[in-house]
Image 1: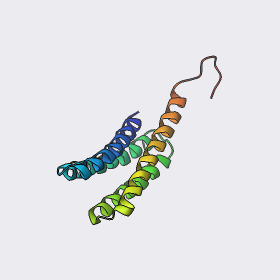
Image 2: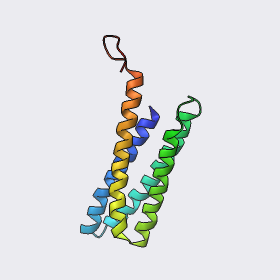
Image 3: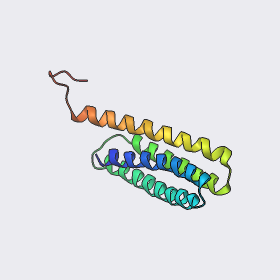
Image 4: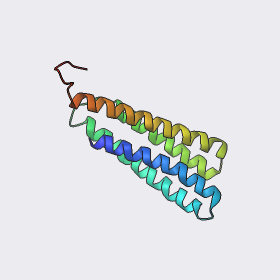
Length: 126
C-alpha cells in the first residue's frame, strides 16, 4: 500500500514539474518553483527506492520494483544534470519520458496490488 502511495506522489511530482516548467517560461519566479520541484521529486524518488526495498524485504515479494525504482532514480539524476547544464533539447523529452514511465509504473502497481487484494465476485480468480 505504501509503495502505491509513493508512486502516486512521484507521478504527481513529475506532472507538477511540467507545470512549473511552463511557469518558468512565463514568469521571473518560475525558475525557483521548478528548482524546488526538482528537489521534491528527487526526495520522492529516493523514498520510492526505500519503499520498494521495504515492500520486497519483509514480505518476500519480487525484486522487480526495486530495479524499476533504481532505474527511475538514475533517470531523474540524469534529468537534474541535464537541466542544470541547460540542455533543453534533452531535458524536455526526458521529462516527458519520466512522466510516461511513472504513469505506467503507477498503473501496473495499482493493478497488480489491487488484483491480489480483492477477489472477483462469484469465486472465480482473475
